[in-house]
Image (cartoon, rainbow, N blue to C red; front, top):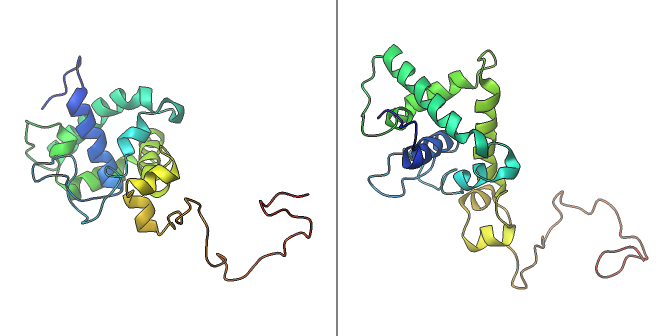
Length: 189
């Protein structure tokens, strides 16, 4: 499928999701899901909301996603030709690549010597950020939605009062005693 220059729409979404899924693989959302390759049985970057994070204007990539969509598919078309791969023309070129080839292409694009490395590394970082920190939603909302990244990494959910408490010190011991004038809310007196 050659991307339509005037309406990226679903093809853009599928391409960006396929890139995010290459960075943090996940399970297919349905049997006919082409963007998510299904390389991992758990939720990956797509299930974690990578596209939502990438489309937020504060991250700086939202306005570049259309360009990244076209450029990534151009690279995928060239990669397929170089490697003798026939691509399904019903989907964007990057989406049509088998997962191992998606991974190989992303490795090329993010290599230190690649001239476009910075934009592909940025896209990869944001894809990973959606998974490992749920940066686009509140932590409470992420737990309510059973965010796959936070659960995989082992973040503690809030307690019954909705507060994030930790039953043990993260280093296995208190690092410093409380100041004697610290209030019950943790503020200095």
